[in-house]
Image (tube, rainbow over the protein chains, first blue to last red):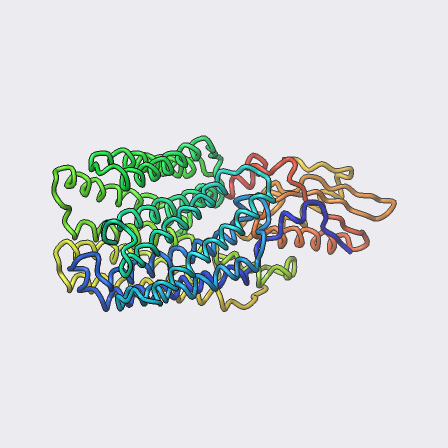
Length: 430
Length: 107
């Protein structure tokens, strides 16, 4: 006879039923986005404010990036805040609202009809984020522990709310003139609150906890993380202020430098975690995740080019802006998801399959639940597709764009293959 | 890290058995990982008290690992009642990994 007592409430993780739908939705979205990328490759030789480009961008940003981050954050909230998730039902509601809103909004962009599908899509997404923030806020309030990672998560959620509200206002602005200028003018504001406020804060908040944890690193530096937090939020808030109230191109340099320094400091944090790791062998999933940290520096480089052109009182080439967007959504955001999916999803499914089978024999490790060969192939093809697409944009060459799209589509197929392999895993006891 | 016990011989048997309980992510057993803090044997009432921790609170594998420890002790000492207590005081740190564990991770 045996019993387990003590702090057992601290080992109850979020149910897989809450988390898995987000992962499945994201995997399908990635596949849909890459199919659309192939079909709409010629539109990447035109202006970035193109219906197909906008639809792909929103499927990548919301269906792929945001859905998987929402799913992973529901799973990781207990690890990050050292407390339980407040409500599984609210997490389910968040999924239903977002899962309904994203295709409506994307369809609205694809056919460029800013009527009811785009408006309802936007409204549902905003509601999903409000539900997420309530759930996260209640979880944090119950935990009563100050935790820098959780603060990153919550602030990221607030910026996402700002981003989606601005986005919905821009959708309305097409039919009712709500804003003093046309919607295209506010695109930079909408995009940067989303990319920097949501994705960057989330990736740094979660990554700064998971990267040392998976590497079993001795390194810990909450002070540095608070500094990064201040730089990103200060930089972004000042960008919003400058954008809305001070029409000065040179003033944009200040927030840019703040965010760029924050990214360099996070890269330094990851380097220190890596160099002080106890576990010497680094698996492929972690390698691709660490590579994504380096890939964060690419948009910074492209932005240097864009700001330099702007300071010379010229309008940046549309191709440079398209590359900027591409290296964000298909670059570091995609790379970190490709890596971290196969660090987190196998655990979630492994727990579902094996949690009642402890000490009954040798169980496979979570990393054995997907094909390593398929994963490595996916990583190599991804790098090829990622490198080729910006060349296609730069050269205005449809054939190169289509070739790169085929590679990225293949990446999505291989990614889905491995995700399905994990999801249908049956218990194996030796 | 040394495991506190009131019976060195039985504790050695218990730890040998617990070397089969492996953290699925790290691939290292719970003994060399330093998760076992204390194993006490109450001979009079045939009870065993094991105090252990996890690498992190809300460790995704936490329930599996604590259950595996309890079941392993139960099968090693079937005549005893097993009580596994989970604690996070002191919290686990990588200094608790044994030399064998460090060597394993350095490979």
